[in-house]
View (cartoon, helix red, strand yellow):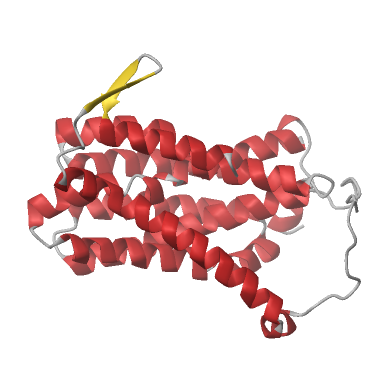
Length: 286
């Protein structure tokens, strides 16, 4: 019995599909810091090393490219070995990347850490969404939406202690502490992931007309509709990610980052409050 089969034949509480969905959401929430908390580190890194914000932000671009373009490879690994080792590997990469960021003294070191972070985030994101779809063939939209919401809203809570720790102890200590924390937490959660037994899975619901044609990957990329959808995703994501990466430096440059902001009885610096609200809305609308 190989590892993939063992993952699919578990029983008990952790083999409940709703439990698997929650585990995936937690993994997504923890790895979201790599993307949505990055903007908090840009100004402190520039103040320490004087690399220039454009050079520092190139690390974020490298992270995004690595995170997204390697997902097909990570999907193949999930089909071959199951979700557990892929998410566990993603956890190690996610933790290692921020630990390396804490010690990086040159831009090449920062860029190398960004590649590792992208591999980790892509492995966790792609695997958790894909695993949720396999557990919920009858509720695919709900499962994918809730799992993606974990990534969108996960950083809403963590940006607050991250921002506070950067102010109190410096960005290096913050990278190190949260790198270890999120790496260990995701790794532990990865050990609880299971691959569903397809023989016991509920049948998929067909509420809409679905084509009977089954395209190969090569045929898919030759279809015009694929590129229309792809470009739509790129356009939407590019605008959001530009705002996500640049909001911290912009707030610092305009002197708005530390202005007190009160919302629902909680008072936080404007930048921290903005990031929290942004992530809540991001997760809710997924």
